[in-house]
Amino acid sequence: MGKILIFGHKNPDTDSITSSLVLANLERKMGREVESCRLGKINKESEYVLRYVGMEAPRLLEDVEDGAEVMLVDHASNKESIDNLDNTKILKIIDHHKVALNTGYPLYYRAEPVGCTETILYKLYQENGVEIDKKIAILMLSAIISDTLLFKSPTCTPEDIKVAKELAKIAEIDCDTYGLEMLKAGTDLTGLSIPEILNLDAKEIDLKKVKSVIAQVNTASIADVMAIQADLETGMQKIMEEKQLDLFMLLITDIVNSDSQVIVLGKRADLVETSYGVKLENNTALLKGVVSRKKQVVPILTENV
Amino acid sequence: MGKILIFGHKNPDTDSITSSLVLANLERKMGREVESCRLGKINKESEYVLRYVGMEAPRLLEDVEDGAEVMLVDHASNKESIDNLDNTKILKIIDHHKVALNTGYPLYYRAEPVGCTETILYKLYQENGVEIDKKIAILMLSAIISDTLLFKSPTCTPEDIKVAKELAKIAEIDCDTYGLEMLKAGTDLTGLSIPEILNLDAKEIDLKKVKSVIAQVNTASIADVMAIQADLETGMQKIMEEKQLDLFMLLITDIVNSDSQVIVLGKRADLVETSYGVKLENNTALLKGVVSRKKQVVPILTENV
Image (tube, rainbow over all chains, first blue to last red; front, top):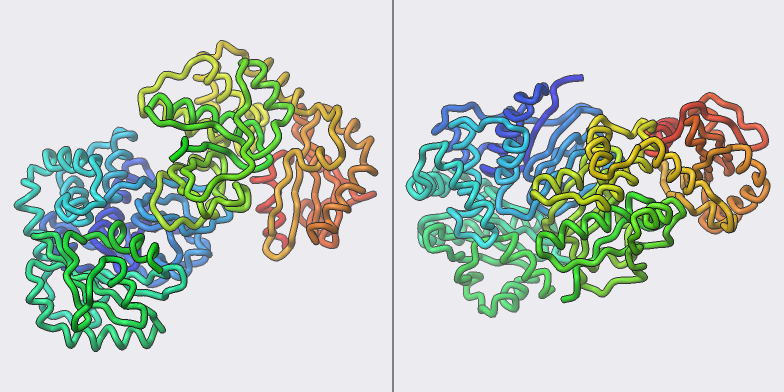
């Protein structure tokens, strides 16, 4: 049997990348042979974080052998995991999302409705009496800042903030300064193609029977992204045809002011209008105060289907 | 919104009954309004435990309102839960079984591959700094003894034993004496009809495509139960027809010697023969050392389908 493989979701964000490294570090301290992996390209925000701490990215995992032992972080769903997941042996899950999984066997499962996987991992370090060194603290803190948009997202809980404060002390970092730099690094779209931009943080979600993709792009300037609206719409249209979608919603989220401009296409675009009481003009509208897909988009749209 | 309802699986065993009481006690100490419930009749073992500590049984829950807030203990599967589960809001799961669930939202999920839910609940009391009083300790200890057959089942882990020892100190109980009395109380079949005996601890399980029921009856004397073999077979046959089963396996488990006599019916009865290298004679065989459905039956049969 090879090493136990630890990975986050497809299309990895900073939480998936760092959680894989942070859990791997913990497991090694507990004497297990593990390898930190990832299921996709590193985004620019995560690149910034890894460069900051001087660490290598987890290994890109294309597929796994039948029977491989794995641990999942930051997801608990077949759809968002490696294709072969049903033929692996899942030993452990650390997550903060919905449950969408069927295993035939018991396993270690630790999930909490907090803003970030790292907030849970922090507890596991404490419970096992394993010290968090400076690099690990920076990785963990980065993910909490990323997932909570510097504590401004409604997904952020008091626990995330408490843990972030502890980590900032170990990391010897000023959250606001570092956090804004890191988030801004993530908004850099230079060199990305339209399909890459649309796939930066895209989730395929069935809102009851409405086949949807809800994608999100962070920015420090909504106007800069809206300048390429026509190209984005062409790209969205193409994906809609390929995936036979009823709805494609792209959130362009202003990380400084915490609003989202949305571009919405598809025969169920009306859902966004009725859900937020807005009128789409030229396929777009501003949703004041909306930043979280998980808390402020998916449940609201689902309710209005 | 009413109280949060806490319940274990259908056809509840001692772990499901006590875990519902023990988690409810913890949640109340944390300031939540909860009610301990159950999804079926109390068995004689659990009756013995409740009488010993002088506590009322959890309330029998027939159905729940849409949108009710619930916490699951000792199961994480739609099939084994309340019929309306998909329309409830699951706040928390504490379990030691497989995952077979789809929620649309994040929740608190705590599972470990240990022998008993109470072993995990013990940790939650510790982590939250809530004292375990004598009655609660007896409830917890009873479930560990029940699920591990006095630590002799292969599902029993070193952690279950460690926790049981701590609990025995608080409970001021000798595990062996109390445990054997409790297990024996559970083997009392007086006054039970054949369908009730067959349903004492029955699970519907699809072994790949083989539709099966695997039921278990604990006893201090295999011969006493085998005396009613003909009646049991008639009852099994009836259930097989109703549920269109391919296999009905009844384990009659000797809790003193840790062996199981099995009665096997159905067109896939051959599975038991090939899995254990035994020959069924008059539909029955002795499986030496087999006591755990989860560890020593389901995976072995599945592998041999």
